[in-house]
Amino acid sequence: MSMRFNSKKILVIMLAVLLMLPVMGAGSSGGKVKLDLDDYHAKNSSTTIGTSGTERSIADGDITFRIPDSMTRVDDTEIFNKHISDEKDGEMYLDGNALFGIFYFDNDYFVDVPEEKDETNAIERAIISNICPSEEKRLKWNSLTLRHYFYPTSQSKSLAGLNFHHYVGKYENFRVEFAFTPTDKGICVILFIYNHDGTKADAAISVMESLRIK
Amino acid sequence: MKKSRTGKNLIILLLVMLPLLIGAKFLDLELRNVKGDPLVDMTLLVNGNSVKAQPADPDVDYEGQEEEKPAESEASVRIINDKKKSVAIRVSKDQVYIDNQLIVGKPFEKSFEEIYKSGMSVEVTDDYGDYRAMKKVLDYLDEAGIFYSKKETR
Image 1 (cartoon, each protein chain N blue to C red):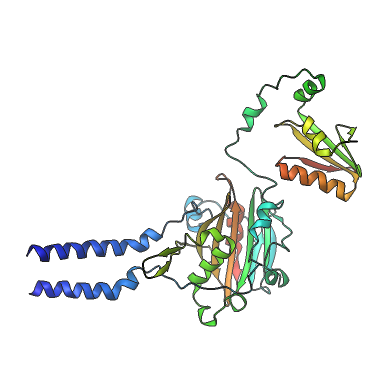
Image 2 (image 1 turned 180 degrees about the vertical axis):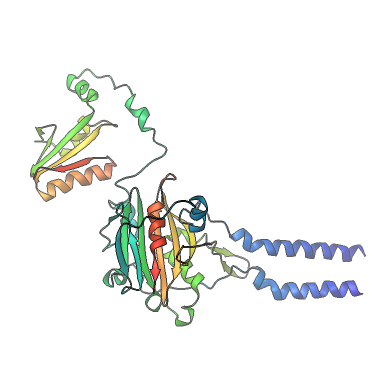
């Protein structure tokens, strides 16, 4: 009788631990998400997003957005991967003390195995690890027999209805925020890089709100 | 008997559900065409002039620095330098001037370090300066993490 009671107890504990595992993986290591649009909408319900700026496009016009006048273009020829530079698929801007980057990740060109082109979460994890190599160990957890890959992401939605995945990583002393939104054959990746908690993300948020995908 | 069957079922259910419960398992996906050429080269961003040019270090109390007492020194030049609030660098052709004094016989870095003190403002004037001379000055200031304003005489 007491034996049965113990096994039941163990079962309950095991179940609780197993249920907790994915939760333990969640919770970003790098800090809070400044680009969280839902959070921004909640805090600035009366604020309207600025409509002035320069209309820009990447990925043959499939991705369009508006850059506010406060942002300055950075010479990004050497900064982006050669393919992204050659195809004019990426742009980098200085926004006060922070950097704002946007680029188109072409699944056909960058994903090694064709069958994996639909594995959005895994692709996003690979993009994060590629840009911030130290994040790789944070996204990986080894059990005795299996390697597990966590992706502690959060979601938000722009006023235009685009869904974003967010991840906050680190590169040296800089916080690197990622925001991903899917396109037809790839992913639109947004980067926000800064090293000061007081950094304002209003201009970056404004670009994300203006983003349109064909 | 019924209870033990429930336990057994629970264990089977658990084993079946195991991969789902550890739901955050994704495959280890490889990217191609990124070897030696990352999607975004962070080393260039951090070491280049983009972010590093305007670092905002929350740990540094800039206000406190102005109240610092100047170091005592017997050399009159040193005392004058200690009271100074700014340093002017002018690059004219391939010649570099610090506070209108032409630098001759010693490297620019050494002459500058003798005059510059933490908290001083630095202004660099490009007076038809030679590209290499200008680059040397700006690279030095960037590397030392010294803020400066820049103007051109043309």
